[in-house]
Length: 150
Image (cartoon, rainbow, N blue to C red; front, side, top):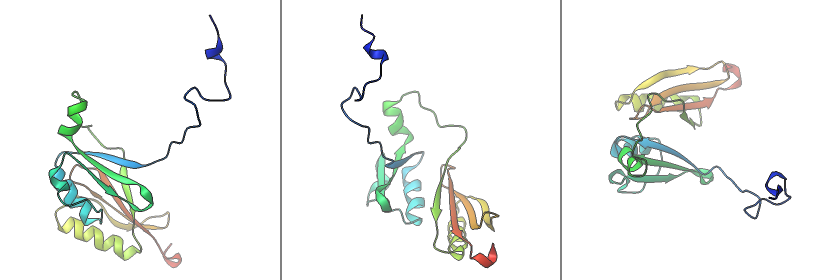
């Protein structure tokens, strides 16, 4: 029996170098209409009718996409899937200026979304706030503070 599988070759077995690129962020949602409405408020351009689909995508600048899938959709190919007990991830959205963080936070919490952290001047030099989407995922809103405020 040959031991060639133990040696490194100059060329990968699949025929070429890997070209893995970050392309999308996927979230599982319990209510597609509520999730699409929330992210549309943050200028994510979901197509018309996305709120009625089991899967929806919004393209972002730079080619990244935000993917939303309903719990039912995920269970269609992963029958034992259950929502996690907590979240360890968040989306971080850059605002143009500190006042925009405050305004967006006020708009979202005024619309009934949960404000996790009210806007504050963070020690790392940003105006920062956190709201939760309808499924409890953190959405960080931030902007650089002017040098005098740091």
